[in-house]
Length: 239
Image (cartoon, rainbow, N blue to C red; front, side, top):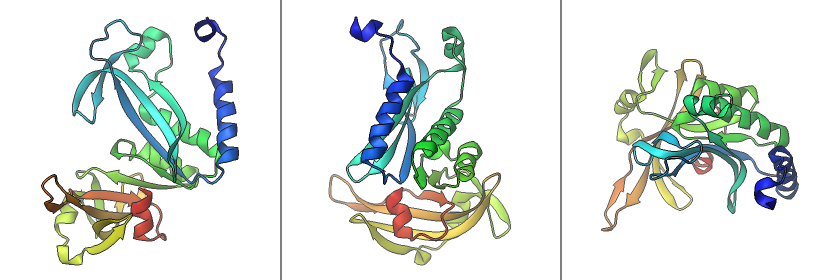
């Protein structure tokens, strides 16, 4: 009865947790946002279970989609907030206001900025959009995020997919760099993305080893940031 019937106030619980968190760890500088799937393959009557796209499996699965946020620390990720994402039809059935994941992430950024003096925000490609990055810039913060290979970027007066810009770059122009004991090669440039503005761009690959000890370079990650002064090592390490 204590767990199921007590008059819980989630807002007050979060306030207390955040108060403890930021008093004990005042130097958290990197905000992290993502969403994850809690798969429920056999659930049919569980509240709010629905079909959601799973990035890990590259297909729709049955379960709960959960927005997660936290801060990077030397010990790992420190949780800040979690919140269930409801599909529009599910939200209507439950009498809740529907919000997109991007809208929810912007709310978390706003909330975190009022409690913490974090400087950077890091996401995956889903949140590398005008709404979320615009919110970060509006809060006077910096972002370090990857973009998809088919994202249009303007460089040298040519607007096209970033992977096509990358094809014009010779491997001889890449530089090698060791970050956190891992070897990377990268190429640095700048470009313009509609509704986001001018960004610093890194084409990055990491040297990886397979189960047979064979070495190869990873696929190319296209990182963008509005930090034009920090070192490449710092940018890659922070991401």
